Image (cartoon, rainbow, N blue to C red):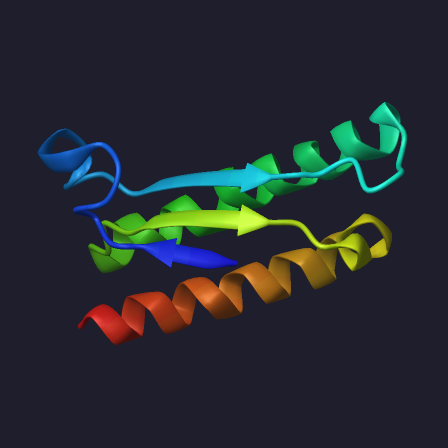
Length: 94
């Protein structure tokens, strides 16, 4: 996972608003598995990541690049890994 500063893409317009994005390469998987993984990431972002970034006033842009292991990971594992990175990014910016 990569965490970009608020002065990254989007400039001042996006500086006060946290954003998330993800890159889900095909990695030899079918479209059904790829879409399922993207839905899981979108739900984690909606429920946990953006809420945490807003609560802490952390205007970071979080970019996730899924690795091969991500396709087989359980929802809880994906959530735990993503939140660990977001917590580290928010505490680093304080």
